Length: 162
Image 1 (cartoon, rainbow, N blue to C red):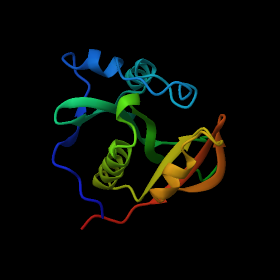
Image 2 (cartoon, helix red, strand yellow; image 1 turned 135 degrees about the horizontal axis):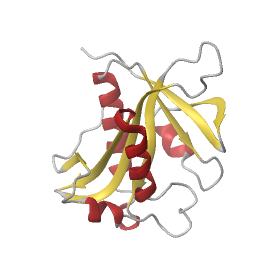
Image 3 (cartoon, rainbow, N blue to C red; image 1 turned 135 degrees about the vertical axis):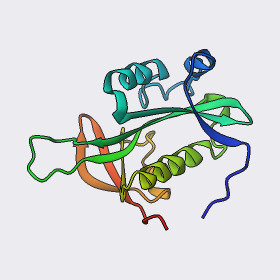
Image 4 (cartoon, helix red, strand yellow; image 1 turned 180 degrees about the vertical axis):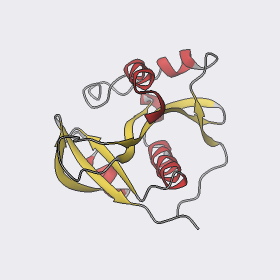
C-alpha cells in the first residue's frame, strides 16, 4: 500500500478553478496520447452522471486532471458485456510529471469505484513505445486483448471494501 502525502487531493472542477484546469498541458510529443482538458470537460458535460472529472491538487495547486467513468457498457451490441467503471482521462502537467501524481489519481479513482460497489477498474490508452502501458501495468492493470477505437483496454481487479 502506498502512502499518500497529505498535500495531495482531488477536487471538482469549479468556476473558481476552471482556468487553472484548462491551462494544464502535457509535454511536447505527448499531445496525441491524451485529449486536452477542454475536451474532457465537454465530454463530462455530455455524459452527465457517468463522468467524474477532477483536478489533481498538490497543496491546493492544480498539477493534473483525471476523469473517471462509472457504469458504462462499452459494447452494448455484445451480449453479456457488463457495465464498466474506470479511468477515462489522466493528464499530469508537463512540469509536474514523474512526481507520483498519476499514481495518486489512479488510486483515488479505484477507491471511488470501490466506494460505489465496483470490483474492477478499466482503462483505455494509446498503445506503443511512447504510450502509458508500462505505467498502468505497474499499477496492476492487465491488457484484456480488446480495443476501444484505437486504444488498448486493460483492467485491474479491486479488492472489496471492509
